[in-house]
Image (cartoon, rainbow, N blue to C red):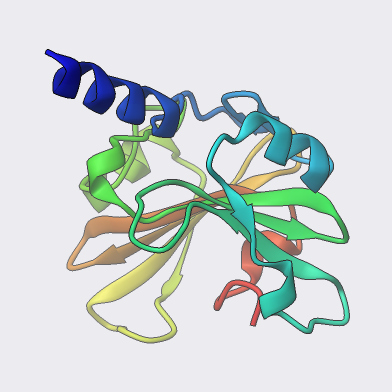
Length: 164
């Protein structure tokens, strides 16, 4: 019984809301300071020291090997949410997530910019949605299946290799 309680406690601390909205993921909002975001993200750490970028880009993530959303920070503000783990079952407000088809993305977001994936074209594509609030979503596909996506503000949303 004690083992079950410990396991439940571990998962409750490391599980996070799957509520992704056009400007937030749970309690974390685009534009929030990294310090404030970390106060809401139990177990997350900053990898600020790993990057030497002139625009101060880094990530807030769980320690290596743990699954979770990655929060991009630019100039000390949360700028983007990166979702690349299908087990998290995170979807946009329109019900699109990893494993969705290109057809489902196009149905949910009729006004979309389709472009070749920079690394796996022609099998892969970027499906970019501009949201009414000025943020956007980029769905990455391989053979018409969403393999990852990111939601955030511009220009951070367009950074192809994260902070690099």
